Length: 196
Image 1 (spheres, rainbow, N blue to C red):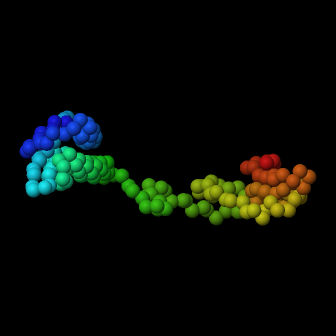
Image 2 (cartoon, rainbow, N blue to C red):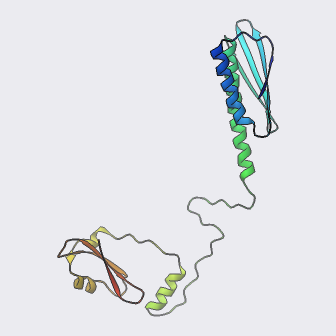
Image 3 (cartoon, rainbow, N blue to C red):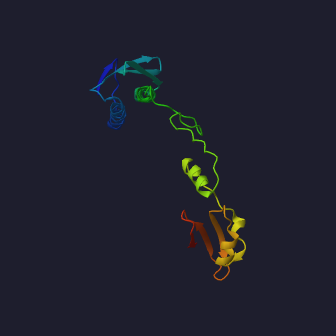
């Protein structure tokens, strides 16, 4: 970054010069994406206050930061910090406008996209196969098992009797081992036993 000073510049000690160089390097890293930028630092003195103004162009915007303090170094650092904040704000605005594509749809939390097809209504039919075919057309739904369903200990035979025709699974506690077991009805009608 090219830095041009205008006005009477006070002598800075080496540590202040390093800090100033680091501040302008940080600003340069933020701004210089398409070539080297130039910054103009205007220094002035009014009675007991030192004024500093930093000007530079960034994405067709003129960024201006002013600072006033009793010493010139603090005034320049304040001005650089203000320009840095303006550059970050301008850059984020530029990114938001450039990244928003006109064809992109944004949906609110919980709202469905318009591209999702509505679920097809199931034809009225009787029997287990027709109900499964209608369920296959809809997206899968997660069902949380209740805590009271595995309260009473039972054997495998008692669990098979307790599992009704319309139930696809049953969670129970085995009476012999006192472990949780799950009976799951498969598509072919058989039942799987899962021991946890």
